[in-house]
Image (cartoon, rainbow, N blue to C red; front, side, top):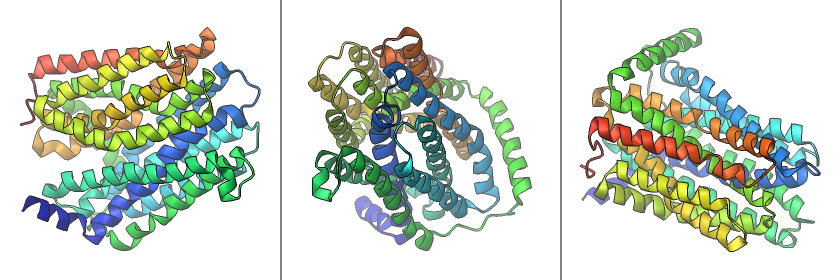
Length: 429
């Protein structure tokens, strides 16, 4: 009976159209963000530069974009909630991100400055469009449908990003099959394919998702002011909920490490002299391992507690990051890709579930707004930390191990949450 109810929900046109946006924009996350941009940045746009310098530049681009998003997200969230502009905001930033991804095709060899600026701006468009997409969940689902509908979008994101990435990998491995001259041409056309994929699969949302009327719709100026006032009130209020406050600090630390691994793994492999084709295959493997593993770790979290599930995932990240320092061969990188895939999605989904148990339910919207803002701040410290350590030491092997303190500090803070709040995750009850 429950499965039949879920099926009816997920086949509604508005729900499917909303979830398809995750299918659309995940192409950027896989092909560009984690896959080809770090490789192409080092080999094509930074030709001749030392690997330690290119790692620093890449870290600067990722951190700079993350700071811009973190500053803008709360304001745009207020506009989305109070100004009745959720769909328009999503379309604006989706078009911005897709267009700038297309522009990467035209950035010439050696132009690392242009590539950095275009990539950072595209990343900002990608992230800010997600702010509006998240807020539109209330337009397609009722309170009791949130979990299943949100999970549907998450699942389609994994699959959509993986499908196009698989095609793009084939383009790079066999450019002749696509009428392309070489591997470089294949990577550049992959950026074009991401832009087209992103825009095409955003179209259903325009036709089938309708915003619910905003009660007391406000002007842009008032929406921004009200949003900032609410943010200040939430920041002050959360101190009264010590476990939730401590968890947000823990989450900020360890999720920064998680996002940094995603963004810098390919760069690290190149710095050690691994073949780019092998790195691409490993990243594709991570993508397809990640989907079922996220579901499995979520199930395990219900059995042993979400907090223990998160700590298990962080332990895998910690061991893998230390092991990365001693990496010598391609097969070891493949093993690392599988290990990361096993816990990557699960850590993120369990974190959301655990936080939900720490906050008062009648203030969930307010607190989850803060949770999302903290998530936007992630990947600010990690990329800069990794890039700076490598640049100052001259040792590229320190790139991944440099973020170990983020996993350790985040895990210890999570233990403090468990001590202060008891096992809020319980056994999944």
